[in-house]
Length: 374
Image (cartoon, rainbow, N blue to C red):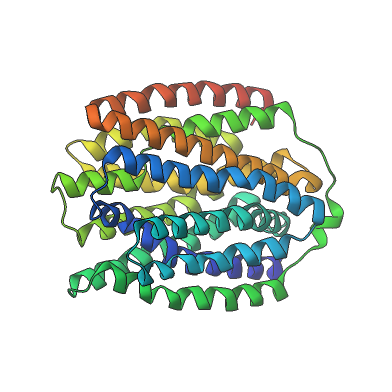
């Protein structure tokens, strides 16, 4: 158990360093792209396509990882592509910037199913909710550090390019830590677990995931909203994202432990809190809305992943995570694109859209809980 915990902690640090890089960039990307004069509709389309390509490819990378059993190769290549983010500092071309963003997203598509599979094997002994919660919490420390780095850069009078350039440092450290994690990996669980295939409940779970994710507004659109409405200053926007990611980390730990005791019932909080978060973020209390936003992300990234490990056997685990992540991407694309359109009309329509789609997600989740008695 001690070695398994060490592996989870090291993989958490790997994700921490990765998030320092790409979540730091994400915290300012909406505002940065706004300097190129793009519209909210184009922003929503670009972000949605990028995420769809990222998450959509995971269904193939997960299958290939299971087929080849080369989980570590997929993990290393995927993390290496994070170097695309600091390379943004070296170009003024919008087309190249968008290409680099997509390359990083494709890197995440390569690594995520394989990495989550490795973590699921190790967390069998320490509790999957707890294990994924620890991993997500460390992951989100990086999601706090990255935006804070951009805050300091902008506060000191430097520009976005300097912020992207400094992100080379955590990316190099990431690869060194990943090498150490590989040496600590515990793989006995691979031989102990069977191949249970993909059940009907699993596919219902994917449908629930699509609806649940689609109803949550993405931070890029919120950052765009905050900037063009002059609600918050440029340097404060990444700090607000850091606040949300800090809440994410706390939420992941708490909900992960709750999952190990209560099971899938914990997921009820997602469709309940999501419309409230959207309404507050575009309404009179955006800070409270962002706090709820962070809590919801923490739930999505911890117990949603833990749930898949309980529904699938070892032989289909990476495939299942690839499908889950594809569901995430499809939900993100649908939500981002439609909310970009609705924003051009009225933010009230975004709130209504979130409420309707999360009610549908709630109904599907109730069906899943009844079928699994979870």
